[in-house]
Amino acid sequence: MNPTVILPGAATADIAAGFAQSLTMGVGQFCTNPGLVFAPPSLVPALGEAVAATAGGAMLNERMCDSYTASTDALAASDLVTVVSTGTRPDEAWAVSPRLFSVPVSVFEENLEKLTEEHFGPAALVVTYSSPSELHSVLAKLPGTLTGTVHAAESDHAEAGEIAEILRRVAGRLIFNAWPTGVAVAWGQHHGGPWPSTTNPLHTSVGATSIRRWIAPVTYQSWPDALLPAELQDANPLGIPRRVDGALGVH
Image 1 (cartoon, rainbow, N blue to C red):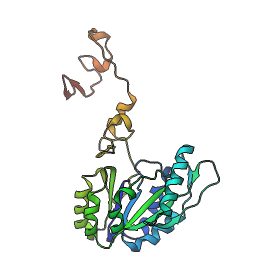
Image 2 (image 1 turned 90 degrees about the vertical axis):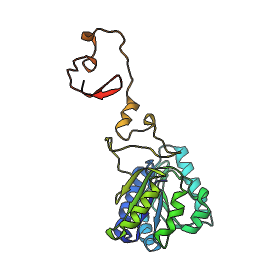
Image 3 (image 1 turned 90 degrees about the horizontal axis):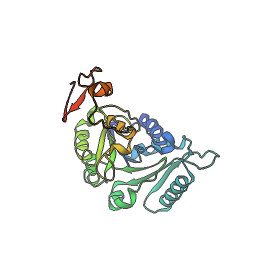
């Protein structure tokens, strides 16, 4: 669910617009969608207004549309959470509307398994807290996830460090004062985390190792050096990094 912790110093109305944009990007179908937010109660109205101002869109297929609608309707009917706001739903096939719910941290922790079920699409649950210290035990109990985000002002840095120490045990990528839906195919990026997240590059398009998903390895056995592709010739005419007997280098 890619938990996002908004600490008190960062809980301003300005942050709500960024949250709504990240939540609804791709109709909430990015696997790094911020579906779980921990925030002070004072921020909930701004988050609700931002989500109410958004429009949904078409899901990838009818099954996903039906699943999102059924699961968020069930959550709305639950006596555990409060419906904060709902965005608009376009008049098109398989379209859904963004939805925002809230719950106190004590209720969330008591119903952790039920309230950490993913609602694939533009839906999020805001868990409200009075003090950042209330979050330590519940964050440690979260299931494995791809990302963990902390929004903090300079006055929150001590608390941010404590939160990051907990999140690094449940998340594969830690983000500071940004949103998890921005990713890149770069050496400093990866797409994984503890189970049920994945560190298998065969199932991701994020990070440099994701190139393995798109290649078809070929081995050349007993071929004369002159007939090998330039990438494999002993002289390495392309000057590329290669592994020789497992050793990486330009050789």
